[in-house]
Every structure is written in structure tokens, then in C-alpha cells.
Image 1 (cartoon, rainbow, N blue to C red):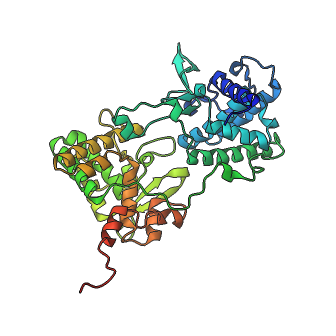
Image 2 (cartoon, rainbow, N blue to C red):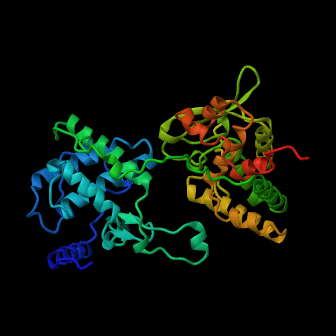
Image 3 (tube, helix red, strand yellow):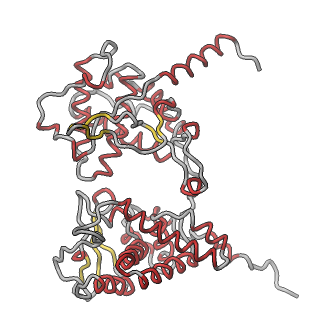
Length: 437
């Protein structure tokens, strides 16, 4: 099919426009470097623009101020703050530098255009690795020119096989699209409450299905098999026996992740909480519970099994502590290997677990379990939480598992019922259609 010449020129112009759009500067620094905007009296956006000619400068300052106030309101959790900063900042960068409009002038059709932009951003806006937004230079925080609003990546297996991230492979995930809708709707509602806006353009989008694909079936829960877990735990027990100074902590971490379904963020200290030994508490009936502050700053208590208590005792004895914690004991749950205090980096926990997975992979491969070993190569830390939940829903009441896992609804817990396709198929493989003669 031959396209009309004007159609070709429009397409060429569109591609050219996308390629020449310069990547914008980051706007808001990390939480620890960000001032409290509610205590500031002056806001100035001039450092973010090369030209102000196409924008109302006073309105840009107003939007800068209230966006800062909006994201700062989520300073109780760095993870939540980062999500809200990312989505509102991207919108500001697009509105100001690409669409050349103030945010207060955006309408429904503008937001739809923005969503299409996010789904297919220009290459200049895409990075191939996560880098800091700002960096220190001569004692000052300055823009990092290598930072980009979007980042493409490869899977863990692709990385192991030597595949490098390519901007051409960038895909905006469905979860990110849902995040854009949720965060920006809250953002515009905030601006309405502050009398900056009169209406919420997100709510005016009637056909969100153009952007959000509804799942017709439950997504497969990613977990490791029982055989793979047996190899992992046995491997780490061997490592702990050979090098307790390094791997007794590794063994306890793995037991926490699977035995109590902890998220990786629930093991480390941050601005929300400091997981401590004293968070293990015994009730009047002699039952042990673990109290944790989890996703969304929600606290919950987890029923602790007898085997998990045994794992706790082993780790504490290694640390030269009494076998069981006392009330109000503030010793960090996961201690640093060097120095004092709690582990504060989820990256460090991931590195420890990945080492354990790699060692287990090698043992499985040496034992001839090549397929199982290759599948273990894909596993991430979060799979241990999925594995613990998947196993428990087989034998425990679902509402008990729901409360221990911190799920907001039973629907989330139901995803784990019969989630192991391998075991389900094994149980159904020999079903008979008729009795043998």
C-alpha cells in the first residue's frame, strides 16, 4: 500500500519531533535532600527551563509549589514517595517541555495524548540503567545529565546470557499504566482541594480500556518448587556450617522470607520502621507473633511457626544472645556483618539471596537436575514469599494466610490456590477415563 505523500510527511515529522526532544532535567531530589515545602515562602522554576516563552511563568511556579507539597505529603515511605514523585514529575516534564502547556490548562484529551507519549516515549527520554537524579559536586546537589525519565531493562536470565538493555525494547508495563491513572487522579484531586484546579481530567477519560488491558485469567504466581527450596535451604545450611560468620545470617534471612512471607522491604530498617528482635512477641497463650510494618505503612502481626522459632533461636545463639527475645528488645532483626546497626539496603538482601540461589543452582546442576537448576536461575527474592504463601494455602484456612500475608482482600490470596502448575498437573496426569479391563 502506497501512502499519500502528506501522510508520509506527517509520519516523518512526528518521528523527527520525537527524536529531537531533549531529555528533561530531574525536578525533585531524593527525600533526604528535599526541604519541607510547607515551610518555604518562595518557589522558582527558572532553573528548569531554557525558555519560558511558551508557558505562563507564574503558573509554572504555582504548579511547582503544589506538586512539591503533594509528593512531600507521602514522606512516610520512601517507596511510596518515589512512585508519586515519578508519575507527577513525568507529567510536569511532558506538559512543560513537550506539550508546552501549564498543568492547570490540561484537559482530558491532553492526558490521553500524554498516556500515548508514555507508551512510546522518544529515545532521548529512555535510559538503559537506573542512575541518581542528582549528584554531589563541590558540596552541592547538581543535575545528573545521565538520568532519564524512563528506563528499559532486561530480565535476570537475559542479563546472565549477555543481553544488554536496548531502548528499542522499551515497554510500559500494565502496572505502570495503572499507577499513572491512580497517582495522577490523586494529584489532580489534591489540586482541586487546594483550589488550583476545578476538575479532574483523569476522571473524564471514559475509555480507560484503551490503555489498561483487563486480565481474563489469573496470572501465574512465580514461585520455586519444593525440590528447589529443599536444595536452597540445604545448600545454605552447608554454607553456614562451613562459614557461620557469613552465612548464619543468610540462613535466617531465607527462613524469614519463606516462613513468614516477609517482603524484602520488611527486613531492612528505613524511615518507617526498624525491624527488631523485640518484634517477636509471645501472647498470653504462649503463642509467638511477629509484628511488622509493611506495604502502605500497614502494620500486621504474623503467626510464627515452631520451626521459625527454632530458626530464630539458632540465629540468636550465633549472635551470642539468649535463645528468645525479651519484651522491648531493640537489637536489629538483620544486623550488619561489619560495624554495628541494622541492614538498611534491600540491595544487600537481594545480593545475599542471589548468592544462595547461585550456589544451589550449581549443586542441582552437578546432581543432574538441569531443568530444575535452569528454572531456579529465573527466581528472585520475592518468589520466596510467593512460595511460602502457596504452600500454606494448601493446609491452612485462607483467611489466616491472608492476614499473615497482609493481603487487602481474599481475592489476592485466592491467586495462590493451586498455583503450582507442576504439582497440579502431576496430580491430574493419571486420571482415568474408564476402568481398565
